[in-house]
Amino acid sequence: MIRKRSKKSKRVAFSNCPEYCPLTRAKKCKRGDIVKVSAYAERFWVRVVSSNSRRICGRVDNNLLTPKLKYNDRVCFSPRKVYRVLDKSGKEHGGGL
Image (cartoon, rainbow, N blue to C red; front, side):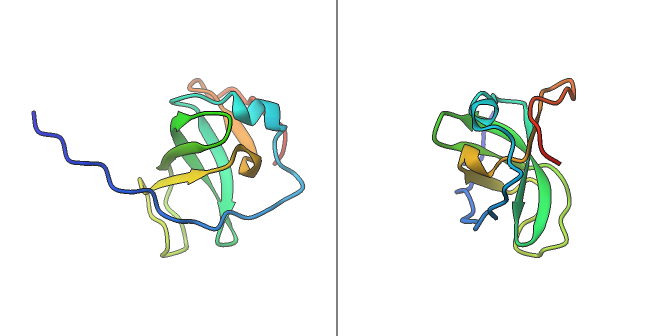
């Protein structure tokens, strides 16, 4: 089976907000978890593909109003930018909105 090379992650200016999920919970997110982030004045969900203590990478998991990002775009961001964390079963792991 031939696999396409994955596209580079898009450069996105993620928004700052005082209502982030606790950093310790965001750093524990793993592949398959879903996290809520904000960019371009819009909050959206990202399905985690990989993560470590400094960076989370994933795919946009919903359709957005902004034309700068679309469903399934790859994005990377700091765990500090996470509002909420849901595991594969939909159970919430962080505070916030």
